[in-house]
Amino acid sequence: MESFFIVAIDGRKEGLAMLWKSKFDLNLTSFSLNHIVMEVKDGMDDFFFLTSIFGESETHVGSSSWNLTRSLARESRLPWLCFGDFNVITDVDEKWDKLGRSEKQMEAFCEALEDSGLYVIGLRSVIHLDQQPERG
Image (cartoon, rainbow, N blue to C red; front, side, top):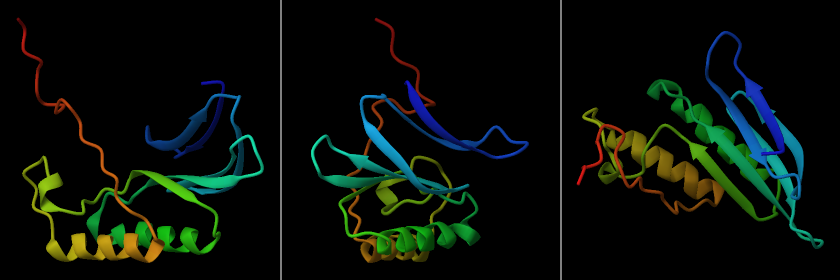
């Protein structure tokens, strides 16, 4: 990609980045260790917001990411596409690992999405990272 914005976390390999081809007109509007918001011009006079989220990995502070999402939703009435890793699931069927997920935590996350006007469109991986492709 020709253009990028990176939020690096000191002393760790983790961080957050937004990468795009320079033919797209993106302008940074806000960022933190857990989000990047870009205003995107679609080539006409229309704009929308594009947000990358990295949710807290520790479940006891996960709600701070959800409150961030609620706050970002209040900042504009423009169309909004939000993507990333919230580190929580909306349904037990999304679970791949053996770790249990709190029903209360999933409900709180779904409530935050609803409060923010967001809908889950979902992505599914074709091959689980632990699976090896079959050889023919």
